[in-house]
Image (cartoon, rainbow, N blue to C red; front, side):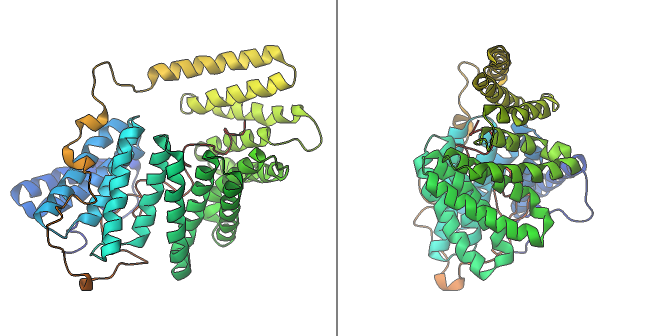
Length: 433
């Protein structure tokens, strides 16, 4: 079966706007559904179209609307895996990872964990048994979202070895294909630093963050498009150093702010929030010559940057106001501190009321999903089902065979860029305030 028949949903032709891409994806789903209703051979293509539609809706902020196509895509691949033993397990792994992302977007991170776990199990089984679709890069890609979901569920200790395994796999891949794997390794190290910090492994966090910074610096020297990742890595490294009481954290924080200023000058909508977070890290770093008054200018600038974004970044604004209040209090401005705290509390209260919480009596998202989505075993295919011979293929340690791809390219469950969303726990910017 060729690449298109497996339902890749790849974008072809000229670049298109988000609205155009979304409209085309919806049209593609309708067409593929009609074909699948006429002939079951069209099911893989329908699953691929649904996966792409879900990713585009999620990218456009349509969180609720992105869940149904992700669930349907995963359901189709689960059904195909039972109908055609030995096929579609790699596609199901990717669809499970994406479904976990969609469930997490609805505000139910605990319900998202089983999907991320299943994605890892499915791909790990393929790799260990050297089955068709085995891909070490894909396994590494699924381990990182799994670590993030574990952290979301309050299992920070379990998240660390998961992220460390991903780093270990990517180190091996980077030796074989540095151009493809070094950016992923640097991103994984960046995430590992935050996971270690969440369990108070300060020295381990610094070690991982320092390597991430160094690797992104090398990448940026060759390819300037990695400047956003370098800025995030600098900010993370500075935050870890500050929490350790290392005064060099302030110099690293200044470097992060300077780079984010360059990026925000080019694309303020994309990097204004990053600049605000870096300013928060700088405000929380130890003063070089003066006293606590050195924290006020960057803390105030962070608040103003976020205030200018309107309702887009209200949670970040609430945290920035809370941090500003703390800095004002340290500087003896009790009145200003109370004012900042009062506004922060009001924002937190309004956000709590607006946060999608289920009305009384409404079942959680996990209760609305079919049984196969939380399959307890390592594979949705019964153990008695015959598999293809090990000798028929070898697990790829570089590029996997053509499988369903996420809108971002390689099989990573919807991550928009390698450093865009660090996992829960201590984070650059806000954590050190």
